[in-house]
Image (cartoon, rainbow, N blue to C red; front, side):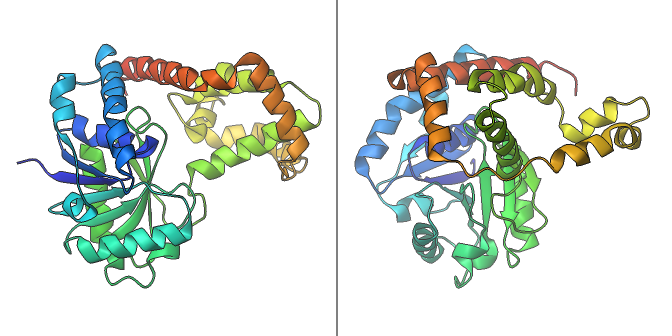
Length: 310
């Protein structure tokens, strides 16, 4: 019998996690405190899994995958017999403390409790819980059924056994887990993404380029380069003798440039100007359609990458 995963929260990320686990053969119980959210997610799940099927990214039929995802009538029902719980509720410390206290009370002692939070360290909402050693952050990239990275960010008191069991489950679910060796707000991906956004905002704010052209720098430049390898492997290949050679050639320039990259304050007028440029290209009513277009392009890329040697 396959293991059971509980997904708490039936919004965008919760639905995506349900697909990740169901696609990999896990049984999934999904619950939301708002019954309407649980009801409305059913059609969206069907659309998303249908898109995966059209790109050849599921090995079974849409119906077989969806059959593994069952709505739960209560939190207790969702958590019963679960090997792992993936929480996806509101992004505040107060709400996280409340839901994890309830899950720690309801879940069996051997159940791993994880949070999809994008920013909040595990220690901020688990310190006083009796079962704190079985709790950690497992931060995905949206949507996790297409972008496999998951950041495992334990608290100082999370047990090594919990981390290893979680790593095993996510790996078997087809994800690519990375481990934070110590806690930091925003984890790894959002801090790196934040550095890129900071400099993009600086360059826009100071009149160096339009938002459209700055987007092209990533989608037609760095994004293509980084879609198969990360920054360290990239610099290892971009000098004849590897990393140290690259650093010798260009390190001083990067250091000089870094001195000219101040924090950006995300000023209202800057964001309003970017909003105006974006709405001229894409109306607000078309955002959802464009997001689905993006996801389908990602599916094509994922299908391509699966065929390539590592």
